[in-house]
Image 1 (spheres, rainbow, N blue to C red):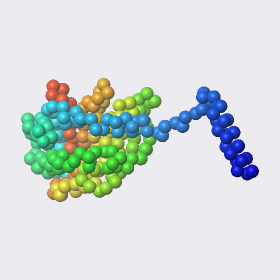
Image 2: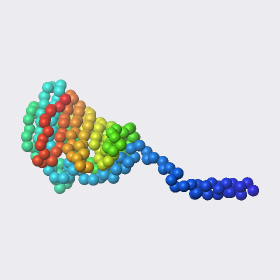
Image 3: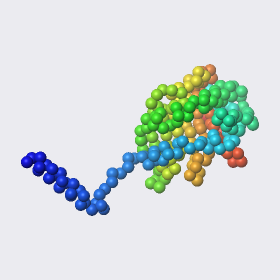
Length: 238
């Protein structure tokens, strides 16, 4: 008898739910940042326009504030058949020690990262834990901010933040500290800003602070822009 009454109650509940008008039903809102994150994951495997779209003009400005020394390097970067970067130096100015202690170690670190499998360093849930931190901007154009923490301590991974354009899914800011560095650098902090132009990545500026083992703290500003684009005004270091 008790079982029969229970079944009847369940059936009544189902009938009431089924007769509820569709316009009175509500859908749970998406979790904050979920749309931006989904768009980011959908685009993260696209070809890097700063690496795979032909020759790119690169300007590297560097300094060693403790030694009051500065340097600058202008080059064209191309991707060879093995998908590694090759630099053709067009102009080099400043103190040679800056090139030796700051610019050269940075380029060496970049080369080591290129030698790693992309799948092991790409900023995705396979390698990182993501935590939504907040959102800035308007409803029509907003940026979702996520904290990223590597799941493993290995080369090429950073601990920091990623800012995602909610409309395009492009990571407009990546900032943090490499969890592992080469023997020539104690610590490397990176802030990379990507300007979105017409729904696609435009110019990109990477600011780097390094703790060298012999010359102290050094700074770099790496500006990437396509051939024919007017170079921005130079400003060396911090």
